[in-house]
Image (cartoon, rainbow, N blue to C red; front, side, top):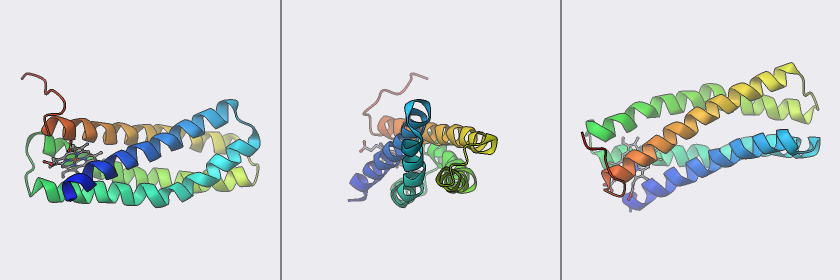
Amino acid sequence: MIKYVHPVAGVVAILTIGIFWLSTVFSEIVGSQSTIVAVKTAIPWGFLLLIPAIAIAGGSGFALAKGHRGGLIGGKVKRMPLLAANGLLVLIPSALYLSFKANSASFDAAFYTVQAIELLAGGANITFLGLNMRDGLKMKGRLRRKAS
Ligand code: HEM
């Protein structure tokens, strides 16, 4: 069971954060102000899906690893605190701030500064999740490992 839950939770996490990132960029480049407000308001609610998905992917990953910390598992383990810290210290506070600012129609320099930081931190977490997915697929022989 846990073998199936793990990759599904991982894919849900990547898709959720990827949708946040893309809808932010598209709404702010081509969307109207009401679209930006809708996207910025929806993202904190999306955390109700994203946070459990990351917690389940991480928790089930540690259970599947059964204490092993070498090779590809070691890389996956090292990325998890970075992913969590980025999420808790940057992404959640930024999303709440941006939602508040957007709903007050306050699109000032502070809004765009925090928005840029959120996009960078979100991009980093998409990369960490993507690398964990790649390594998981390699471990299962579904992707070729580089000859070493
Ligand atoms: C949260 C980000 C993570 C994502 C997106 C992710 C993704 C994946 C994927 C896609 C697979 C392949 C599953 C399959 O093809 O059946 C996999 C396998 C695996 N992952 Fe992760 N993973 C994550 C975190 C972790 C962590 C933190 C660990 C270890 C501490 C871990 C340990 C494993 C193990 C041991 C397997 C092999 C499972 C098996 O033999 O059935 N993963 N992972």
